[in-house]
Length: 570
Image 1: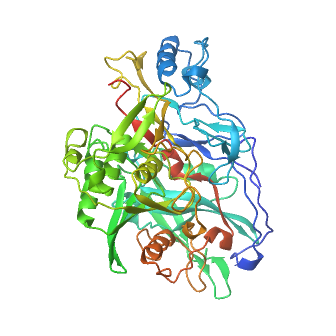
Image 2 (image 1 turned 180 degrees about the vertical axis):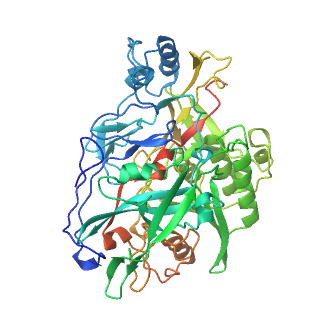
């Protein structure tokens, strides 16, 4: 099968067919599809495939002119603060373009094991700067340098259609059909108002059908910041017949017209309370540890508290609770302060003042982050809305391979404090390291002062520390498996794409719906009984012939990280 990415191929199998596409479930051949994960280029607002060659980190096109003054600032920051500073060359080439220069200072991980998503290779359990995938040929560093754009920019600030999606290939008798499946829509966004919903299968964009050779280019038109002011998408249902055959009903298409606009994509996406077996169970979809936003542009602003306040409000509205199901399946991480706040609101009150997370720098020095008291939740860095203490001794987390960084620190920190964290879904990414933010604001008055060169503003987010919990545990470099500990448990494994049910439409159930597989599994485990819905909770991909292809709108959020904004020594 042709690949849209130079130097790579996508493997699949199938023969031709026309018209509708019936697929006998028992005839579907199960084959592993190897591909390269996309490298997020946030500053450009687009995705670029990191396959066949090493991509330049930093969001530009790699053609930036040499800038000796900028490079010297970068070297000074990196030589002191980078976690692997002892391996930085003492004789750097300052004549390089700034992106190439920055990358030349980074430590490339040594491949060791399969990644959590099964898509390539990861380092062998040690802290690492990025992932090494596609049999070790593609390196996607966590550290990066950016220019012009606001630091740790939130994609919610760009003009957007207001929905997230994943590209799927569907192996049919006619070859591979390609769709964009809607993962969720932002409330009151253009997509939401136009009637686009989670689970919708998009077959065409502006009258052009997705194929295995054009899906990357076509899907970019739907991304925030793509420059597309309007788009028309064609949605088709996929049904499971009584004979167990999946049929793409392209005879009943639905056209949805979209107009891009400013979208406030709050990470506090949804919250609700369910009564399960006499227990009051809260459910919270939390899609990023973002602190706040600029009220005029909706761009990320770590000095604002809008989203932290929304998080406090959601938990206050649900309290008191016997259990909390925290949905982090789409959460790539974010700010350390938001992570500390959420952990403090979940944990028992007597944990206040004890260690939540410890960051260890390149000299072996530790800085402790502690659970907050109730009063501290609305003071200083957390000034704003009133906090709440749920006082839970266990937590249920819904996770996927996109669950990373601050999401994983939350799990590790709570477990280290004696809170039983039950992880349901898929193995998390495995990012036990974090960053400091170096820009003109954070470095003012420090030995690293700088960030503006030739009239252009730059910022660096290098990996500077490793995260540990109160038990000095940091063993999640290869991710947390589903279960209650490092051993994992099959009883906690679940896939959000459900199995086809004869006579019903095949689609993702709404987030928060009791039939949604991950939530269904969590509520079942909480109640100690069978699954609450009629939908079998197994792996939909293994029973339907669907495979994730290497493109998702969420890839642009993958640099979420675990970000501390107070520099060492401050």
